[in-house]
Image 1 (cartoon, rainbow, N blue to C red):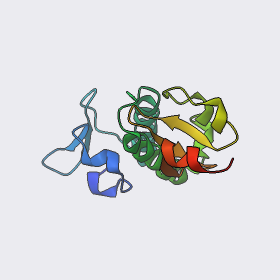
Image 2: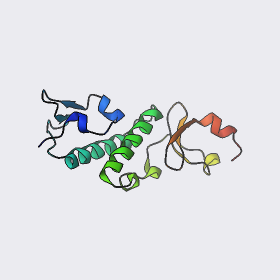
Image 3: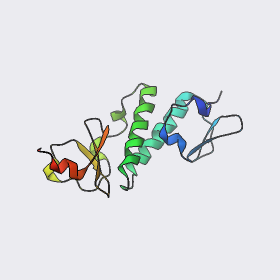
Image 4: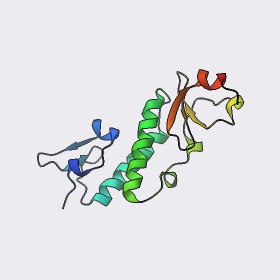
Length: 135
């Protein structure tokens, strides 16, 4: 049995070139050309790829990091595990985070000053807006 591309969870990650399908609609992984045999195999490969993308984020656009973390949360929900078992928000790549905002839940800042924020890294704000708040 194989996993159909259409059976995978709806993820922004799947819109990219990394995963394709064959003529039968089976999901094919970009890195090895393998077709996952079970949904568990597919979800494990997706979570591994997303974790890699999250930790290898280039700090250019925090939207990309946000999308990958959101997708990882979706995959982890499907696997019945918590996303924080896969990544540590405090270990995310980031431009330097100012000490003056240390009490605000900022997890990462991109090169243009957009921040990944929120207790569960579920929002984005501009650094300039955060600095205007009374913290």
